[in-house]
Image (cartoon, rainbow, N blue to C red):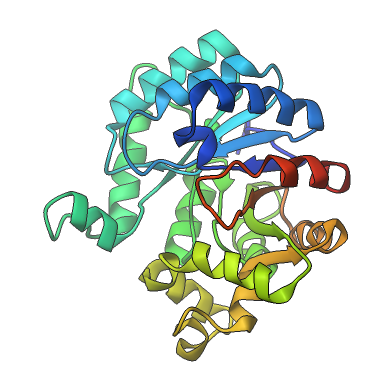
Length: 292
């Protein structure tokens, strides 16, 4: 893809940067950029996503700020393209718009049951809307949370590439294989800076509890060799350890490197705390020398 959005290095994926105290998020965004993290990724599970994006862009000067992901059921293409154009005009080309189709149980819960259908068609239509907007949100400035083969194909042909979430280096390898050498592969990796296996896995399982029940993820894990038994009862140690890297800074750096070796251009870490509402600031600071 010509004029592709460029992203490398290691970034930070954080719900707290989106939903935590805005002033604290801005201050930490500036610190994270100073520590060498190249991108800040925030989720979108309801509410105004563009104000936090603007705040994070305003607090930084070089870091990419990306949505991981912008939920296409909660925004129109016209609004998304207009906000992207405004933020780019103000802060330069630093907003990478990651879009995704979310999950049936969540979307059918917050909307009417039956809302969620034909996800590939829905994403394709949203991309049509971004193309038709004035000004358009260019393919090179967007990426897609793609897990299955059809969504990966869409990511490769109609966006800069893919932002796969909750995946292993084996998925990263398959994504790179599917997209070819030139597309963006920006993989998310959950981490726990904790060397005690029991404590680390307890934090990991708290994080994974919701995701284990979502078919999009379960189906993807099965594609790379996990079974229903791995996914049942809070997840097997094998699955938990594959999805959440834990240990010291060297162990976590080794997992990030495994994604790079598998073809990732960029890896963003999601540092997990036993209390999901706590800022993982100490982990970000400790890991920075090993990762950036």
